[in-house]
Amino acid sequence: MNEQQTTEAPRKRAVPTRAILLLVLVGALIAFGFLNATPVRVRPFGYAPLYLVLIAPLLAGVVLGWVIRARIGSRRRRSKSSGGGEGNAA
Image (cartoon, rainbow, N blue to C red):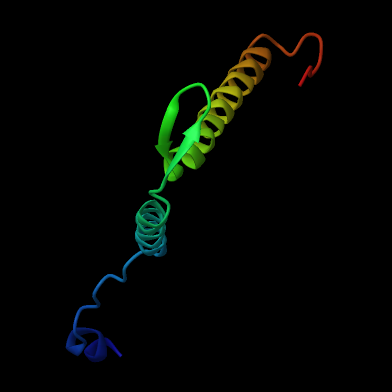
């Protein structure tokens, strides 16, 4: 059994699934941008490409969700470190 281990070629590392998914996502976003480059009217601002009109609220929502989650997490850590006096408010 020990001889088999020494005669085998070293295994190559497989490409992580995350990397493949990331490449597929980036490719899809690039295709989305090219397919939705038509300018549309945004009332108070003028004209903008459709992909920006669709992606801007998505990014704003992601940032807002990240900020809210960070605040809730810091509030929970603070209440645990102070002894958890009045219970869980969240």
